[in-house]
Amino acid sequence: MHLMRKTVVMRAGSEEDAALIRVAQSEPAAFGALFDRHFATVYRFCERRVGRGLAEDLAGETFRRAFEARSTYDLSHPNALPWLFRIALNLVRDALRARGAEDRTYARLRALAVPGASREDDRVARTAEARADLARLARLLVAEPEQDVDALFLHIWDGLSYLEVAAALGVPVGTVRSRLSRLRRRLEEGMGDRAGAPTAQLKVGE
Image 1 (cartoon, rainbow, N blue to C red):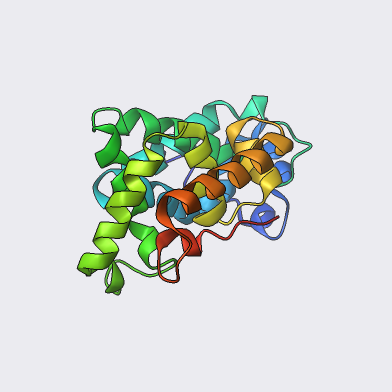
Image 2 (image 1 turned 90 degrees about the horizontal axis):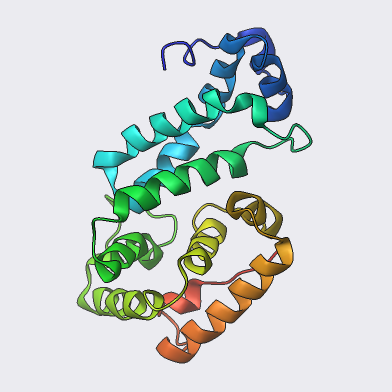
């Protein structure tokens, strides 16, 4: 990872990720610019899913694997985040396999109580009603296909468009669109679309 931390300042600027990766294929030190640009985002991606303890290790491993696979990157995609998220998601899944399915899903849901809130300011998530809602939502989601739930969180938590979610999961964009629509409908039926319920905050769109 020391090699990747060396920022190539003259190339970091506003260049697209694909341009940085193209250079890094022949000049490995250039990959440090991609690391500097996206490490914080990938860390937050991991931290939401596995907690602070594992997040830094998984984020670091994501960039190590990306560095090793840089020659395989599709340079027609200017934004590398969906690619990085795809690597990180596989690592997260491996890290969470030891947990029970419902506990795993509940842990991933906590941030939905107050979208965008920090851990220090997550007051609503500490209320009994919010905890009960999240536990119920976790029980609903545990019965859903893992990739459907991942698509939802990539879109809601990480702000990816349908196209970017499709790239991160390696599926057609039409599949993402139908999965999200179907999943939200089932969650609303199971939870009720009342104000304050977690599903009331799962507004998906292009």
